[in-house]
Amino acid sequence: MKKTLVAMAALAAVSAFAQSSVTLYGRVDAGLFSSNGLAVTAGVPSTTVKLRQTGINNGSAVGLTGSRWGMRGTEDLGGGLNAGFKIENRFNIDDGAGTQAGPLLFGGESFVSLSGGFGTVKLGRIFTAFDDLRAIAVSKNNFDAAWTPVGDVYGAYNNTPGTVEANRVTDYDGRGNSAIKYESPNFGGVSGALMYAFGENKTATQKAGLQISGHIKYANGPLAVGFGLQTEKAGGASLVPTKKHSAISAAYDLGVVALSGGINNSKATGGAKDTEFSLGVTMPLGAAAISAGFASSKSKLAGATSGKGSGFGVSATYAMSKRTTLYTGLKSTNRKDAAGLKNLDNDLFSVGVRHDF
Image (tube, rainbow, N blue to C red):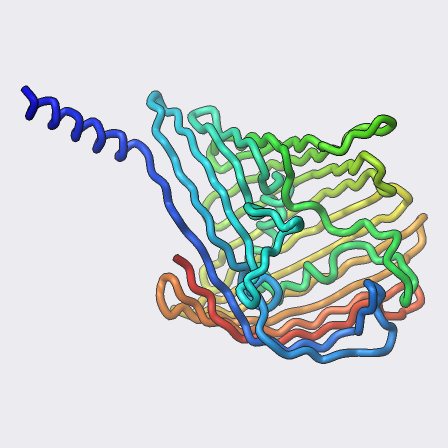
């Protein structure tokens, strides 16, 4: 009898383990870099003085991706229903510091989820539905890495050089806190997502902020294309309470090369508006790949052109194994005000290694 009970308990434990799983994962990315850009003092860029910097930096700044570690897991609840979670910490490999504001312990994402035939519902800190859509546009643009010019070029710069950037849309917020996100099932390649993030900064006289985002896309075979929207209301005591973003993103894999691109529009309270464009191409060469990309933006304030930006990048990777990749890349970007004076003029060259576990 005792032997039977022990066998039954062991079988139950094995069955429970088979229905759930937890994975520890991570990525470390470090690169040797050399950059040459305008000197910045107290957040104010110089109009003439440039500085060259050389050193080791985190992959998010000079390489393929930021360094991170995290845990994720799923549990089969039966009846086609699954529970899941993810917590991810982002950090700088060069000095060990956290990269998220606060610093946040799990600034990458931290959520719990339920999924089934109805789709997936997530609760926590989550990448926005708009960010999911924007990722398509840069997927073949220098591997969506540090050499992708979009990060420098996008975002309105309506300031006068030599002054603090006061009137700018800035790029969208890629994550939402205190958020609920719904991701639909795939219907023959068509899918969508919606997310609402609750602000927690309500005051006695002002409403709390919020963030709403959504997208619809078609992804089937070599083609992916979609449309996304995002509205951000800072609330509380913020001086710039509302930003609105829209984007069309597309990617197509031709086999010998793969293309991606996007068009974005952003506007903010106060009359600042951005129109932005990007295009990228990646060519696989066995264990290696080469990529190139371009981005441009035009900013307006009260209907008048207040700034322009443009940039390009080229890069290459070589997979030493499934988990270790060597890389190198070059990027050149600049932004100018209405008078043609630069408030960003940066060149970056880097070489490094990324290892996944």
